[in-house]
Length: 408
Image 1 (cartoon, one colour):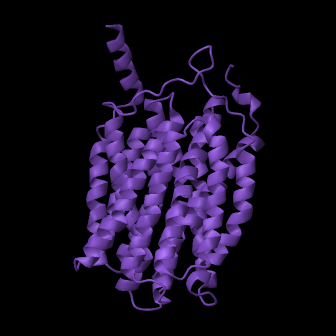
Image 2 (cartoon, rainbow, N blue to C red):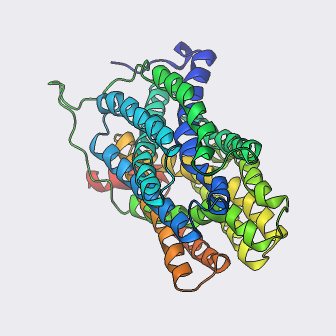
Image 3 (spheres, rainbow, N blue to C red):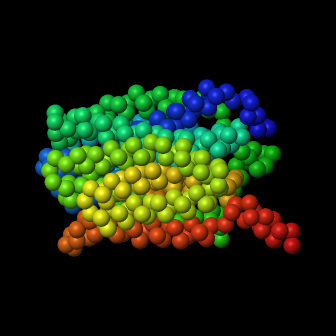
Protein backbone atom coordinates (compact mmCIF):
# COMPACT_ATOMS: atom_id res chain seq x y z
CA UNK A 1 0.00 0.00 0.00
CA UNK A 2 1.60 3.30 -1.01
CA UNK A 3 2.02 6.10 1.46
CA UNK A 4 -0.89 8.51 1.61
CA UNK A 5 0.03 11.84 0.08
CA UNK A 6 0.40 14.88 2.30
CA UNK A 7 -2.31 16.71 0.37
CA UNK A 8 -4.88 14.04 1.31
CA UNK A 9 -4.76 15.07 4.97
CA UNK A 10 -6.68 18.24 5.77
CA UNK A 11 -5.60 20.74 8.45
CA UNK A 12 -8.83 19.98 10.29
CA UNK A 13 -8.03 16.28 10.41
CA UNK A 14 -4.47 16.96 11.58
CA UNK A 15 -5.78 19.23 14.32
CA UNK A 16 -8.36 16.74 15.56
CA UNK A 17 -5.83 13.89 15.72
CA UNK A 18 -3.20 15.95 17.52
CA UNK A 19 -5.88 17.33 19.85
CA UNK A 20 -7.06 13.81 20.69
CA UNK A 21 -3.53 12.69 21.50
CA UNK A 22 -2.88 15.82 23.55
CA UNK A 23 -6.14 15.24 25.43
CA UNK A 24 -5.16 11.70 26.39
CA UNK A 25 -1.75 12.87 27.62
CA UNK A 26 -3.50 15.59 29.61
CA UNK A 27 -5.71 12.95 31.23
CA UNK A 28 -3.14 10.30 32.12
CA UNK A 29 0.02 12.33 32.60
CA UNK A 30 -1.24 15.59 34.08
CA UNK A 31 -4.55 14.74 35.79
CA UNK A 32 -3.27 11.26 36.56
CA UNK A 33 0.37 11.70 37.49
CA UNK A 34 1.47 15.28 37.90
CA UNK A 35 -1.55 16.56 39.82
CA UNK A 36 -0.05 14.60 42.72
CA UNK A 37 2.75 17.18 42.90
CA UNK A 38 0.61 20.23 43.84
CA UNK A 39 -1.66 17.97 45.92
CA UNK A 40 1.22 16.54 47.96
CA UNK A 41 1.70 19.46 50.41
CA UNK A 42 -2.06 19.53 51.08
CA UNK A 43 -2.34 15.76 51.56
CA UNK A 44 0.48 16.05 54.08
CA UNK A 45 -1.14 19.09 55.71
CA UNK A 46 -4.46 17.20 55.98
CA UNK A 47 -2.65 14.47 57.90
CA UNK A 48 -3.45 11.81 55.29
CA UNK A 49 0.24 11.01 54.67
CA UNK A 50 3.68 12.18 55.83
CA UNK A 51 6.60 13.25 53.57
CA UNK A 52 8.21 9.78 53.60
CA UNK A 53 4.90 8.16 52.65
CA UNK A 54 4.46 10.80 49.97
CA UNK A 55 7.80 9.88 48.39
CA UNK A 56 6.94 6.17 48.66
CA UNK A 57 3.55 6.65 46.97
CA UNK A 58 5.25 8.56 44.15
CA UNK A 59 7.71 5.68 43.74
CA UNK A 60 4.87 3.16 43.44
CA UNK A 61 3.25 5.30 40.76
CA UNK A 62 6.51 5.46 38.82
CA UNK A 63 6.97 1.70 39.20
CA UNK A 64 3.57 1.26 37.60
CA UNK A 65 4.59 3.65 34.82
CA UNK A 66 7.67 1.53 34.17
CA UNK A 67 5.60 -1.66 34.07
CA UNK A 68 3.11 -0.04 31.70
CA UNK A 69 5.90 0.96 29.33
CA UNK A 70 7.25 -2.61 29.44
CA UNK A 71 3.79 -3.92 28.53
CA UNK A 72 3.88 -1.54 25.57
CA UNK A 73 7.21 -3.07 24.49
CA UNK A 74 5.61 -6.52 24.51
CA UNK A 75 2.44 -5.39 22.71
CA UNK A 76 3.82 -2.73 20.39
CA UNK A 77 2.14 -3.41 17.04
CA UNK A 78 -0.69 -1.25 15.73
CA UNK A 79 -3.21 -4.06 16.17
CA UNK A 80 -2.06 -4.41 19.79
CA UNK A 81 -2.49 -0.68 20.40
CA UNK A 82 -6.08 -0.79 19.21
CA UNK A 83 -7.18 -2.93 22.18
CA UNK A 84 -4.59 -2.11 24.85
CA UNK A 85 -4.99 1.68 24.58
CA UNK A 86 -8.74 1.80 25.41
CA UNK A 87 -8.30 -0.85 28.13
CA UNK A 88 -5.57 1.23 29.78
CA UNK A 89 -7.63 4.41 29.68
CA UNK A 90 -10.53 2.58 31.31
CA UNK A 91 -8.22 1.41 34.10
CA UNK A 92 -6.89 4.94 34.49
CA UNK A 93 -10.34 6.45 34.93
CA UNK A 94 -11.47 3.77 37.39
CA UNK A 95 -8.37 4.07 39.58
CA UNK A 96 -8.59 7.86 39.57
CA UNK A 97 -12.17 7.58 40.81
CA UNK A 98 -11.04 5.02 43.41
CA UNK A 99 -8.50 7.48 44.83
CA UNK A 100 -11.38 9.69 46.00
CA UNK A 101 -12.36 6.95 48.47
CA UNK A 102 -8.95 6.05 49.91
CA UNK A 103 -7.63 7.54 53.14
CA UNK A 104 -5.11 4.78 53.92
CA UNK A 105 -1.59 5.40 52.59
CA UNK A 106 -1.04 1.74 51.64
CA UNK A 107 -4.28 1.56 49.68
CA UNK A 108 -3.50 4.87 47.99
CA UNK A 109 -0.06 3.56 46.99
CA UNK A 110 -1.68 0.48 45.43
CA UNK A 111 -4.14 2.62 43.47
CA UNK A 112 -1.35 4.93 42.33
CA UNK A 113 0.66 1.90 41.18
CA UNK A 114 -2.19 0.59 38.99
CA UNK A 115 -2.86 4.11 37.74
CA UNK A 116 0.81 4.35 36.79
CA UNK A 117 0.60 1.14 34.74
CA UNK A 118 -2.23 2.63 32.70
CA UNK A 119 -0.33 5.91 32.37
CA UNK A 120 2.77 4.15 31.05
CA UNK A 121 0.85 2.28 28.35
CA UNK A 122 -1.06 5.36 27.16
CA UNK A 123 1.98 7.67 27.24
CA UNK A 124 3.76 5.24 24.90
CA UNK A 125 0.95 4.12 22.65
CA UNK A 126 -1.01 7.30 21.97
CA UNK A 127 1.99 9.36 20.68
CA UNK A 128 3.44 6.29 18.92
CA UNK A 129 0.18 5.65 17.06
CA UNK A 130 -0.06 9.32 16.06
CA UNK A 131 3.60 9.42 14.98
CA UNK A 132 3.09 6.41 12.70
CA UNK A 133 -0.04 8.05 11.28
CA UNK A 134 1.88 11.29 10.65
CA UNK A 135 4.86 9.49 9.08
CA UNK A 136 2.49 7.76 6.67
CA UNK A 137 1.28 11.22 5.65
CA UNK A 138 4.72 12.87 5.50
CA UNK A 139 3.93 15.08 8.51
CA UNK A 140 6.26 13.62 11.15
CA UNK A 141 7.61 17.08 12.00
CA UNK A 142 4.29 17.83 13.72
CA UNK A 143 4.60 14.90 16.12
CA UNK A 144 5.94 16.98 19.00
CA UNK A 145 2.72 19.00 19.18
CA UNK A 146 0.90 16.09 20.81
CA UNK A 147 2.85 16.90 23.98
CA UNK A 148 0.98 20.19 24.25
CA UNK A 149 -1.42 18.12 26.33
CA UNK A 150 1.17 17.81 29.08
CA UNK A 151 1.72 21.56 29.37
CA UNK A 152 -1.99 22.38 29.18
CA UNK A 153 -2.64 19.60 31.68
CA UNK A 154 -0.18 21.06 34.17
CA UNK A 155 -2.03 24.36 33.93
CA UNK A 156 -5.37 22.60 34.42
CA UNK A 157 -4.06 20.55 37.35
CA UNK A 158 -2.68 23.67 39.02
CA UNK A 159 -6.04 25.40 38.65
CA UNK A 160 -8.00 22.40 39.93
CA UNK A 161 -5.90 22.22 43.09
CA UNK A 162 -5.74 25.97 43.76
CA UNK A 163 -9.46 26.60 43.19
CA UNK A 164 -10.59 23.77 45.48
CA UNK A 165 -7.98 24.06 48.21
CA UNK A 166 -10.34 25.65 50.76
CA UNK A 167 -13.36 23.37 50.34
CA UNK A 168 -11.87 19.90 49.78
CA UNK A 169 -9.68 17.85 52.09
CA UNK A 170 -7.98 14.46 52.16
CA UNK A 171 -9.12 11.94 49.55
CA UNK A 172 -11.84 14.33 48.31
CA UNK A 173 -9.08 16.45 46.72
CA UNK A 174 -8.94 13.88 43.88
CA UNK A 175 -12.55 14.50 42.78
CA UNK A 176 -11.94 17.38 40.31
CA UNK A 177 -9.35 15.39 38.34
CA UNK A 178 -11.52 12.26 38.39
CA UNK A 179 -14.65 13.98 37.10
CA UNK A 180 -12.80 15.83 34.33
CA UNK A 181 -10.94 12.70 33.20
CA UNK A 182 -14.08 10.74 32.24
CA UNK A 183 -15.35 12.77 29.23
CA UNK A 184 -11.86 13.69 28.03
CA UNK A 185 -10.66 10.06 28.04
CA UNK A 186 -13.78 8.93 26.19
CA UNK A 187 -13.46 11.53 23.40
CA UNK A 188 -9.70 11.13 22.88
CA UNK A 189 -9.90 7.34 22.74
CA UNK A 190 -12.82 7.32 20.32
CA UNK A 191 -10.95 9.67 17.95
CA UNK A 192 -7.66 7.75 17.93
CA UNK A 193 -9.32 4.37 17.40
CA UNK A 194 -10.65 5.68 14.06
CA UNK A 195 -7.15 6.36 12.70
CA UNK A 196 -6.14 4.45 9.57
CA UNK A 197 -2.60 3.25 10.21
CA UNK A 198 -1.38 0.30 8.10
CA UNK A 199 0.45 -2.50 9.87
CA UNK A 200 3.72 -2.99 7.98
CA UNK A 201 4.62 -6.52 6.92
CA UNK A 202 8.02 -7.69 5.73
CA UNK A 203 6.89 -10.65 3.69
CA UNK A 204 4.20 -11.24 1.09
CA UNK A 205 2.65 -13.79 3.47
CA UNK A 206 1.60 -10.87 5.67
CA UNK A 207 3.69 -12.02 8.62
CA UNK A 208 4.98 -9.32 10.94
CA UNK A 209 8.74 -8.70 10.70
CA UNK A 210 10.97 -9.95 13.47
CA UNK A 211 12.11 -7.00 15.64
CA UNK A 212 15.77 -6.12 15.24
CA UNK A 213 18.05 -5.11 18.08
CA UNK A 214 17.26 -1.75 19.64
CA UNK A 215 20.68 -1.34 21.22
CA UNK A 216 23.64 -0.53 18.99
CA UNK A 217 26.52 1.93 19.00
CA UNK A 218 24.18 4.75 17.97
CA UNK A 219 21.23 4.13 20.27
CA UNK A 220 23.07 3.18 23.48
CA UNK A 221 24.28 6.78 24.11
CA UNK A 222 20.73 7.98 23.44
CA UNK A 223 19.32 5.55 25.99
CA UNK A 224 21.95 6.54 28.56
CA UNK A 225 21.23 10.21 27.94
CA UNK A 226 17.50 9.67 28.37
CA UNK A 227 18.12 7.84 31.64
CA UNK A 228 19.78 11.00 32.98
CA UNK A 229 16.82 13.07 31.78
CA UNK A 230 14.31 10.89 33.63
CA UNK A 231 16.15 11.03 36.94
CA UNK A 232 17.05 14.69 36.55
CA UNK A 233 13.63 16.20 35.92
CA UNK A 234 11.55 14.04 38.25
CA UNK A 235 12.78 15.58 41.49
CA UNK A 236 11.45 19.11 40.81
CA UNK A 237 8.38 17.68 39.08
CA UNK A 238 7.54 15.69 42.22
CA UNK A 239 8.79 17.83 45.09
CA UNK A 240 8.97 21.47 43.94
CA UNK A 241 5.80 22.65 45.77
CA UNK A 242 6.87 20.74 48.87
CA UNK A 243 10.31 22.35 48.63
CA UNK A 244 8.58 25.74 48.44
CA UNK A 245 6.71 25.03 51.69
CA UNK A 246 10.05 24.21 53.36
CA UNK A 247 12.04 27.17 52.04
CA UNK A 248 9.36 29.89 52.24
CA UNK A 249 7.12 31.32 54.97
CA UNK A 250 3.48 30.14 55.15
CA UNK A 251 1.20 31.88 52.67
CA UNK A 252 3.97 32.83 50.24
CA UNK A 253 2.64 32.96 46.69
CA UNK A 254 5.22 30.46 45.44
CA UNK A 255 3.79 27.66 47.61
CA UNK A 256 1.07 27.32 44.96
CA UNK A 257 2.73 29.59 42.40
CA UNK A 258 5.78 27.39 41.77
CA UNK A 259 3.64 24.71 40.14
CA UNK A 260 1.71 27.34 38.21
CA UNK A 261 5.02 28.66 36.83
CA UNK A 262 5.98 25.12 35.76
CA UNK A 263 2.65 24.79 33.97
CA UNK A 264 2.93 28.15 32.21
CA UNK A 265 6.50 27.43 31.11
CA UNK A 266 5.54 23.97 29.85
CA UNK A 267 2.67 25.22 27.71
CA UNK A 268 4.79 26.66 24.83
CA UNK A 269 7.55 24.05 25.19
CA UNK A 270 6.36 21.68 22.40
CA UNK A 271 6.21 24.61 19.93
CA UNK A 272 9.64 25.87 21.00
CA UNK A 273 11.50 22.55 20.80
CA UNK A 274 9.60 21.38 17.72
CA UNK A 275 10.73 24.58 15.97
CA UNK A 276 14.32 24.46 17.25
CA UNK A 277 14.65 20.80 16.27
CA UNK A 278 13.33 21.51 12.77
CA UNK A 279 15.55 24.58 12.31
CA UNK A 280 18.86 23.47 13.84
CA UNK A 281 18.48 19.69 14.01
CA UNK A 282 17.15 17.50 16.83
CA UNK A 283 20.60 16.64 18.21
CA UNK A 284 21.84 20.24 18.69
CA UNK A 285 18.43 21.11 20.12
CA UNK A 286 18.46 18.33 22.70
CA UNK A 287 21.97 19.26 23.87
CA UNK A 288 20.81 22.83 24.45
CA UNK A 289 17.75 21.41 26.18
CA UNK A 290 19.86 19.44 28.66
CA UNK A 291 22.02 22.46 29.42
CA UNK A 292 19.04 24.70 30.22
CA UNK A 293 17.33 22.03 32.32
CA UNK A 294 20.56 21.45 34.26
CA UNK A 295 20.75 25.13 35.14
CA UNK A 296 17.16 25.01 36.38
CA UNK A 297 17.67 22.18 38.88
CA UNK A 298 21.02 23.64 39.92
CA UNK A 299 19.34 26.97 40.71
CA UNK A 300 17.09 25.32 43.31
CA UNK A 301 20.09 24.21 45.37
CA UNK A 302 22.50 27.10 44.71
CA UNK A 303 19.94 29.87 45.41
CA UNK A 304 17.41 28.44 47.91
CA UNK A 305 14.38 30.66 48.22
CA UNK A 306 12.24 32.58 45.71
CA UNK A 307 14.94 33.11 43.06
CA UNK A 308 15.99 29.47 42.92
CA UNK A 309 12.42 28.20 42.96
CA UNK A 310 11.34 30.51 40.13
CA UNK A 311 14.36 29.61 37.96
CA UNK A 312 13.84 25.91 38.61
CA UNK A 313 10.13 26.07 37.79
CA UNK A 314 10.60 28.03 34.57
CA UNK A 315 13.73 26.32 33.20
CA UNK A 316 12.58 22.77 33.97
CA UNK A 317 9.06 23.53 32.80
CA UNK A 318 10.19 24.87 29.44
CA UNK A 319 12.54 21.94 28.75
CA UNK A 320 11.35 18.55 30.03
CA UNK A 321 8.66 18.00 27.36
CA UNK A 322 11.21 19.00 24.73
CA UNK A 323 13.56 16.28 25.98
CA UNK A 324 10.83 13.71 25.43
CA UNK A 325 9.76 14.76 21.94
CA UNK A 326 13.31 15.29 20.65
CA UNK A 327 14.55 11.95 22.01
CA UNK A 328 11.59 10.10 20.51
CA UNK A 329 12.27 11.64 17.09
CA UNK A 330 16.02 10.98 17.25
CA UNK A 331 15.36 7.38 18.26
CA UNK A 332 12.93 6.77 15.43
CA UNK A 333 15.39 8.30 12.97
CA UNK A 334 18.02 5.81 14.17
CA UNK A 335 15.57 2.86 14.00
CA UNK A 336 12.90 3.94 11.50
CA UNK A 337 11.16 0.56 11.15
CA UNK A 338 10.26 -0.07 14.77
CA UNK A 339 8.89 3.23 16.02
CA UNK A 340 6.30 2.06 18.62
CA UNK A 341 8.68 -0.55 20.08
CA UNK A 342 11.50 1.97 20.33
CA UNK A 343 9.18 4.51 21.93
CA UNK A 344 8.11 1.93 24.51
CA UNK A 345 11.72 1.03 25.33
CA UNK A 346 12.67 4.68 25.82
CA UNK A 347 9.66 5.33 28.04
CA UNK A 348 10.41 2.17 30.06
CA UNK A 349 13.92 3.43 30.73
CA UNK A 350 12.56 6.89 31.55
CA UNK A 351 10.08 5.25 33.90
CA UNK A 352 12.79 3.31 35.71
CA UNK A 353 14.90 6.39 36.35
CA UNK A 354 11.80 8.37 37.40
CA UNK A 355 11.00 5.65 39.90
CA UNK A 356 14.56 5.84 41.22
CA UNK A 357 14.25 9.59 41.91
CA UNK A 358 11.57 9.51 44.67
CA UNK A 359 13.07 6.28 46.07
CA UNK A 360 16.53 7.86 46.37
CA UNK A 361 14.91 10.93 47.92
CA UNK A 362 13.11 8.78 50.50
CA UNK A 363 16.37 7.00 51.40
CA UNK A 364 18.13 10.35 51.72
CA UNK A 365 15.39 11.76 53.97
CA UNK A 366 15.38 8.60 56.12
CA UNK A 367 19.16 8.94 56.41
CA UNK A 368 18.72 12.44 57.79
CA UNK A 369 19.29 14.47 54.64
CA UNK A 370 17.22 17.43 53.52
CA UNK A 371 14.94 17.80 50.51
CA UNK A 372 17.05 20.75 49.33
CA UNK A 373 20.21 18.66 49.17
CA UNK A 374 18.39 15.77 47.45
CA UNK A 375 18.08 17.98 44.36
CA UNK A 376 21.82 17.44 43.76
CA UNK A 377 20.82 13.98 42.52
CA UNK A 378 18.99 15.71 39.68
CA UNK A 379 21.94 17.97 38.92
CA UNK A 380 24.31 15.01 38.51
CA UNK A 381 21.75 13.08 36.45
CA UNK A 382 21.24 15.93 33.97
CA UNK A 383 24.99 16.42 33.63
CA UNK A 384 25.19 12.71 32.79
CA UNK A 385 22.47 13.16 30.17
CA UNK A 386 24.20 16.16 28.62
CA UNK A 387 27.49 14.25 28.26
CA UNK A 388 25.91 11.21 26.59
CA UNK A 389 23.74 13.33 24.29
CA UNK A 390 27.01 14.58 22.83
CA UNK A 391 27.92 10.99 21.86
CA UNK A 392 24.79 10.28 19.81
CA UNK A 393 25.64 10.34 16.07
CA UNK A 394 23.52 12.10 13.48
CA UNK A 395 21.05 9.51 12.10
CA UNK A 396 21.92 10.21 8.44
CA UNK A 397 25.65 9.76 9.13
CA UNK A 398 25.00 6.59 11.12
CA UNK A 399 22.91 5.02 8.34
CA UNK A 400 25.50 6.04 5.72
CA UNK A 401 28.27 4.31 7.70
CA UNK A 402 26.18 1.19 8.13
CA UNK A 403 25.35 1.10 4.43
CA UNK A 404 29.01 1.56 3.50
CA UNK A 405 30.00 -1.20 5.90
CA UNK A 406 27.40 -3.56 4.48
CA UNK A 407 28.60 -2.94 0.91
CA UNK A 408 32.18 -3.76 1.89
